[in-house]
Amino acid sequence: MASAPPPPTAGASEVTGRVETATTDVVAALAAVPGAVLEDGVLTHVGNPLAEQRALASGAALAPLGDRRVLTVTGEDRLSWLDSLSSQALTRLAPGDSTELLILDPQGHVEHAAGVIDDGETTWLISDVADADDLLAWLGKMRFRLRVDPRMRDDLAVVGGTEDAVAALAAHVVWRDPWPGVSAGGWGYADADDHPGRDWAEAIVPLERIAELAAAAARGERELAGGLAADALRVAAWRPRITDIDDRTLPHELDWMRTAVHLDKGCYRGQETVAKVHNLGHPPRRIVALHLDGVVPARGDEVRAGDNVVGVVTSAALHYEDGPIALAVIRRSAAVDGDLVVDTAEGPVAAAQHVIVPPEAGATAGVPRIRRLGRRT
Image 1 (cartoon, rainbow, N blue to C red):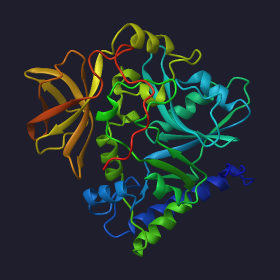
Image 2 (image 1 turned 30 degrees about the vertical axis):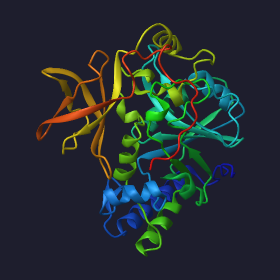
Image 3 (image 1 turned 180 degrees about the vertical axis):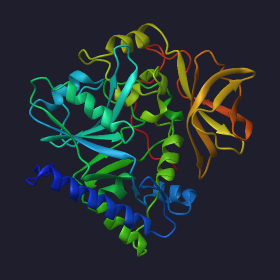
Image 4 (image 1 turned 90 degrees about the horizontal axis):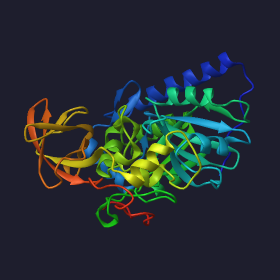
């Protein structure tokens, strides 16, 4: 596994200029792919999001993930430092092992999230583009006198796909999504046999590599998928993302305890709330999967049980097999056996719910340390 490249010796302005030029080249190359639609420089789709989902799930396509950013942390104290700040046990993270972390506020609410992999010299963090700058700023404030150096790496990019598809890339490192397995120290509320599988990995590559993939796609030698396809597969796998949170989100509510929280590790900010809710109570809200009648809702659309608003949609997609689907966070008290209604821009739409986090979620409910499931078929 390749280690991080050495810091550039050129001046900061020269390095910035090179990255900006590479970014411009990448956007131009992606735009040249037949059928490509970009938003803010991010590949949304290449003409047929449903076909792209199928190709991505089968390993025939790769997705340039322009909505991800890469941070690196170097220095001798990097793993113990991140361990002390986050919900995940990282001090003994072995080179090549993939996990994820959450940064919580003092009340246990989720503030930041990142995929994590270490190569023995550098810890690599994959963050959502909407969260990366804030995450880096917060890490910078927490350095104190420790031997750590967190940096944003805009010279790098992320490519997603099945593990086999991503393995063929010449990557610095490959992060293999631990979802939906329950990591050591974690806790899963969804039943093992009822949880969709997920075969997903993300490769960290030089930014210029995206332009090469796009050029190959333009020649018909490579199949690409856009962000819509990647996100639809995520929603179908019930996989939470930082865009699913609000200022009240607890890890328990999104079933994030299975991969991002270690219940037996040392003290970290928000740990008291995490332990108390898990051991003595129940999360006040719970995530559900919704199958809707013909309409894809928007994030923030209200979810009703009868005349009562019980929650909101956090993610939605048109899936190539399941049709309109969504994730929503609803009140714990909402009935588990009743259909819901989502108030969309096109009017009220019936939605069948699938329980992910049960109302009784806590230490007495769940499936601790289950095996990792196979890929979705």
